[in-house]
Image 1 (cartoon, one colour):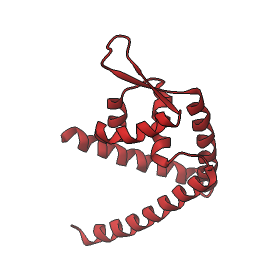
Image 2: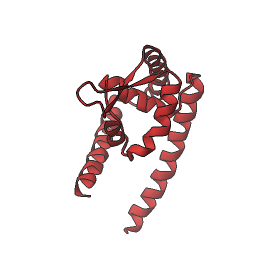
Image 3: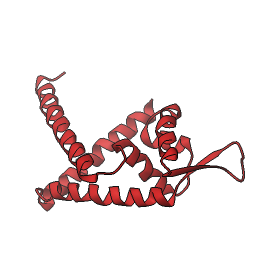
Image 4: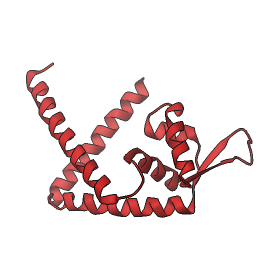
Length: 149
């Protein structure tokens, strides 16, 4: 590996880890809601789709369906998500967000956006555009790699 690239990766990885931890901690402290970050993300996906299955969630989160079960059970037990059988295929289980889940999700989303908005105010418009382009490019690289696998 190119030594310059190796040093760049070390610097970026360390800083990225610090920033992500700081944001995660501040969001969790600020939210004061009974959702972990992954639960919030899963609830967001279910809310966006209105109705989905475990396979969709696993693909969106890039995990195996079995990894979804425990977190999903907690969301169901908390009354945020409900499971129901598909009318067309009784074997298929569909997930949807409950009214209570939507309320909790909206509050968590609002508070999360407040924290992120604070941090993004330190960037000028050009920096925001560059950041968005870089994130999109990295996402595309990951998708291409997934397609090859």
